[in-house]
Image 1 (tube, rainbow, N blue to C red):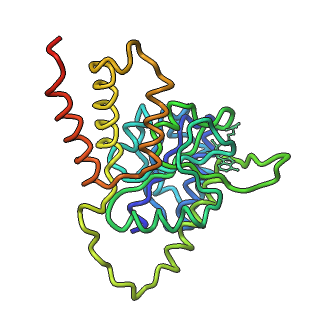
Image 2: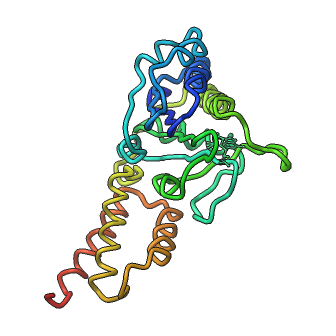
Image 3: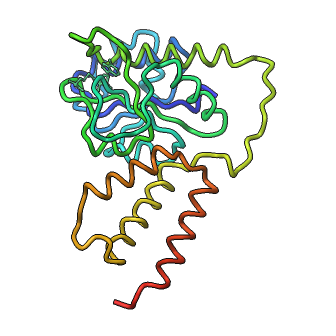
Length: 244
Ligand code: SAH
């Protein structure tokens, strides 16, 4: 279950933070590290700060976009100190997030995403996420060091995992209740966007309207089955469009 929980670090500037994050992960039983465009990796500082967790660094994968890092995941939680205009489902308490992450990780990969030291995550990157989480902290200065933010969320996940009753019967979640992967969700959003244009609902690209609708569907958290119903509905509408 813990092996299904991925830590994604986006464009980390200080390689030492990558090493410290790897150590934070290993102390909490996490092993899957993905780096999106790190400034410098592999790097001596990363290895030094990883201490006994160099194996996590050795197995880390580097990719060039966040989308690539999370497309197979059924839940993607972006860690952010600030609230964004994108109204994604938001966890105000990391322990609530951890419970759901553990639940989902029983069956499929799940990611927790951390932003750049200086500027965090861009709005486009937040859009790749299904949820957001903030670590409650001093309102006057609540921005943690990147690896410390990883440590806190990894600890919460580990705690939720320990509490997940050892005798808990691993019930097989029916397929219809499984959340869609980010890739499947992305295909739905593209389909919806396309149809909004073709039907004349949007006469010109109007990012704000699309974004609002995308956020609505993100909050609804449809299952795989429900998403395929929606896709079917869009396809049915599509066949009635006048030929262009
Ligand atoms: N100036 C940046 C801060 C980046 S800190 C900003 O305003 O977003 C680097 C990363 O650590 C953040 O992108 C976030 O993923 C994580 N982080 C730091 N403090 C956090 C907090 N209080 N809650 C959740 N994540 C936090």
